[in-house]
Length: 302
Image (tube, rainbow, N blue to C red; front, side, top):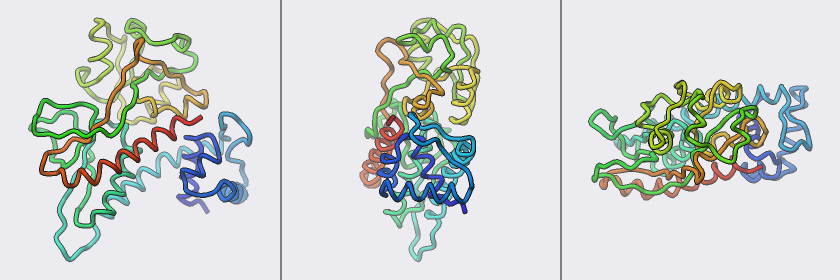
């Protein structure tokens, strides 16, 4: 009854808030997508979203399926990557590991890895489960690292993947939501929700709070991006995240985001690799750029 294509449709609808735009991202027509949704609603005997709402409003039943999609689809992508990497072959396949510095890259990175793996049958492609935060002797062995920080290690080559803005996500009831931008002293009475990193590993501290000699009142560390967004929506704290990550919730009026500082904090995402991996990076980087930019653009559509 419920298929993966239905879950993908719900995610695209949340990202774009537009049936036509969602159809474009799913490489189908608006009429075909509309028919698919009507058939599913008939089977479930529930409406999934309110027609002609702007921004798109999901019904309680639609929200249940949307939450399921966000949980299931990344796992399906990861399983497909792992299965593709373990296809039997007469030739010996070479292990090829990806790693990522930022937790929030999961949504767009897995599809990029999946496409790269499909084009490189001689490689046994995998994604290192543990995130990498420093390129020291304790870092796991990887072939390509996705990171927004350049290391002092001269052995690595860095290729641009895309640009994003680090913004402060906050609940719509937060008094800071009415400010034009966030000042460092605005956070001195706030709970700052971050990924499980040391302060010196986080841009919000290095580029914003520490230069102003400011600290948040409380620090809470959470591994999962969706949980962070839910906590922010509930008013349990604020969080510095990539601009595209909370774009769907912001466009639905669930959250607000503000530039950090008068001029904002712009960051670049890189693919880092050693010179002996350049041959593979030349294939992967264009794929990653397209996937990152498509995901970012779709997430920001209203």
